Length: 506
Ligand code: FAD
Image 1 (tube, rainbow, N blue to C red):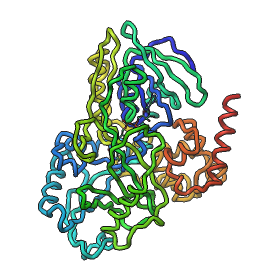
Image 2: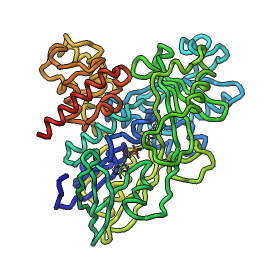
Image 3: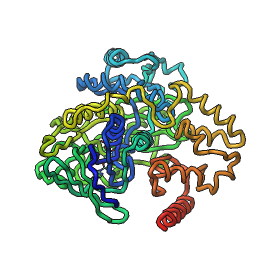
Image 4: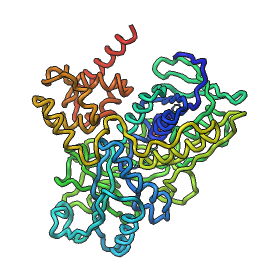
């Protein structure tokens, strides 16, 4: 790892949505930026979400008006910023006799429709489930539902594209690089790093440290900064299951459960339905956490309460789990803990300052980054103005309603390539899909196929442009082709990646 003698303005710990968002905003305002991520980008919580850009309807029940207001307004801003990986979705909330009354749901949705800026997303409507085809997959007892708007996001790609944009603007992004210590002298931090692939150690000097380590934020304060008494986050585990597609239409369902919690059933990756999430307090290291049998049973039972055809273990094709790094507001139940974020600065420019980030959501990461930048400006002096509202992420340089135009354009440019592949690439890479495909005209021009429609050309692009190193990075975070690629193909991909990286080292 190269040792850098020059002093970076802002050193960010953590390559999740918040760390990458802060790095992007800071480099765009003229600070020099170095970001270290110990695993892959989005390998923590930021790839384990329900993947909604939403105001959070149920947070209204906990009077989180500030958060809901801010999050609602972010929906259309983020959709415009990355219309390839973020798009509107309609949510169907069936009224369940014996649970929240219909007038209560309608009131909540009225507030939801009017609390945040909503120009393009359609408002709430009432549905008669007995006559509307949307009611068909549900049990006959459900007669009335409300349909409202939020957005969907590919969470892991949001992180990769945010990092890409930060790097395009000059930020240094190093993955597989853990911060193992940080000391300050005369206002300058020396940050000790270890490359977890090679075990090589090095250090970087910086004026300011931003701790955006998500679930590990307290660990960084304790282990890297040496403050033993840090207990600011409450870790709340959430798990999801992916099942074979349960219905044909494009709406998501929002189901209320008898315990007061809610779950979603969402159309996922064309052929699947995503069901989640659970809410359970968690202690320990979140690395490699998995859904428990109890959570799996809870999700299957909750979905089967609504769907005509029961959802069973046999339907499950994949599951994932993550932990929410929530700011600990000492709420009694996990689902009641605040989803809002808290930013705390410790120290000053003469002694060396650290900004700790607690909590936050995918939806509010841009606003959280702006708030962190407010702290950075106080410490280092202002350089540029807020700029990310109205900006574009790589590949998102088209209008929010122009996705199909992008697909048509690709079909015109590449008439011999399968429409299904072009549509997937347009979703993942937006306008950069054409950069990836270049002069290729036929499938054979894209090189070896590693299962499904994953080609060598795409793999090379992801390694060269998006920090992908392993089959896991490619199959589960840069794409979701893990749902379609078998073990033999995965092994071939691993062999290819290994040969590629050993060539790179020569
Ligand atoms: P992370 O993504 O965890 O990133 C922190 C990173 O820091 C990690 O990648 C980690 O490897 C790295 N790191 C830690 N220590 C070190 C170190 N010493 N050196 C270097 N790197 C280090 N939000 C929404 O808006 N919509 C949703 O639908 C939604 N659903 C959710 C569902 C679930 C089940 C969960 C768990 C969360 C959900 N969220 C949702 C919340 C959202 O996913 C998180 O708030 C967000 O991803 C947190 O991002 P982060 O960057 O703070 O943390």
